[in-house]
Image 1 (tube, protein in one colour):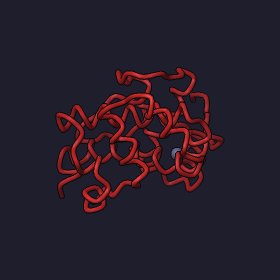
Image 2 (cartoon, protein in one colour):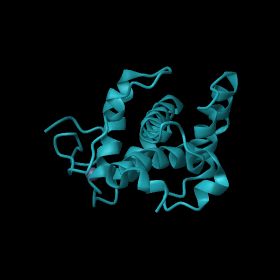
Image 3 (cartoon, helix red, strand yellow):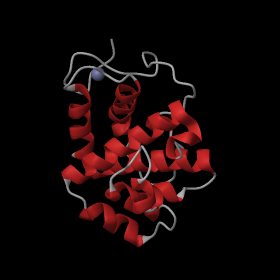
Image 4 (cartoon, protein in one colour):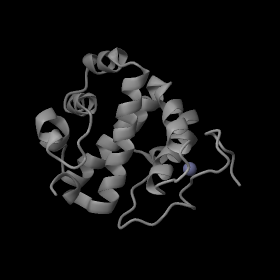
Length: 164
Ligand SMILES: [Zn+2]
């Protein structure tokens, strides 16, 4: 048994995760640029694999999301990772992730808050940090949830995830 970071009595790792049609690297192995804190790796990976596993424990994902959302840096690492993977899959970030109206028509249907962060990936600059700073814990929780759901959806549906 690995060390639990969520407060529930089980862990989610690459070794226990259900198999998907495709497997992307977890947040800990992300090559996305940008600042990051390696101490967040285990937590971010657990949140991702709990999503992949469709964990039936009603406390599991909510607790992991709470912990990620409490930390702006961890939330940002997760969104950076999801944007990096989506960009690799689609050969750039598609309008269905960047544009709120286009995103609302997909089954993914991410929060407009998430679209705003994805849009910032097009031209990261000083404004990038400012956008994150405007988000409160509840909003960070939403975008963290969207980030892992996006990568899990791509693992199952590949590019069709945004175009069903
Ligand atoms: Zn779980």
